Amino acid sequence: METKDVILRLRTAKGLSQDELAAKVFVTRQAVSRWETGETVPNTETLKLLSAFFDVSINTLLGSPRRPVCQCCGMPLDDSLLGREKNGTLNEDYCKWCYASGEFTYDNMDELIEVSVKHMAGDGFTEEEARAYMKERLPELDYWKRYKELGGGKKIAELKKKLIDEINALRIEGMPEVKALNALAGSDVDLAYPLPNGKTANFLDGNTTYLGARLEPLFGGDRFFGVLANNDFLLIATYEKDGENPELVLYKKR
Ligand SMILES: [Zn+2]
Image (cartoon, rainbow, N blue to C red; front, side, top):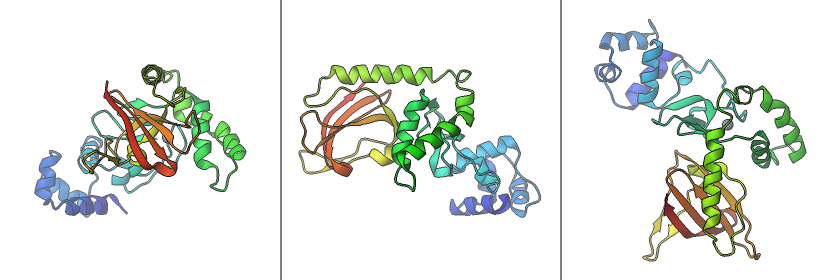
């Protein structure tokens, strides 16, 4: 699809007139009309405004000329997988697991490899093959090339350490010590917890990435411990395989 068709489709899907869209991105109605006839393409600043307004990437607005991959983990990207800045706008270089709310979530390549290998194994790869592939591929990606310049993931490493200390200090009965936290997408880990009044409650935002871990219970049994946290809260729950029958153990504001 070309830019003119993309803009027309996005505008009409929102039920806006050319005038109304023009006002949202500070241009004239004629400018919008020229985009939609293909006479002109929005300039860089206007593309940014359109991207934020429609919540689609600039790459999509331009008719998807690039086939981007996450510059941290190598995953092919589409708009639904993009990371976000602190103000909620899309970051087109990283996926939502590697970059969330303006921060990188991995500070350590080996940790990323171990997490990725678990997801890739079974997809026609063995764990060994996936690990060998990642070890070769990751050093070619922008984040790992510019790792030092980008701060070496120092900020996220500090937050992880702080969260791990806080969680372990809670001494939850039967829960093993937390040693590492990984980035988890809210949409993948948002469980509906039953409340005493018979209703259920969700605590997570599907568009946000959290730090978390899944832990095998210390004394056996079939319930896992799940830990999720970010700058604002800590959540500890237990559940059966595949997140079934979840029970909230603790929810604490930080
Ligand atoms: Zn990624």
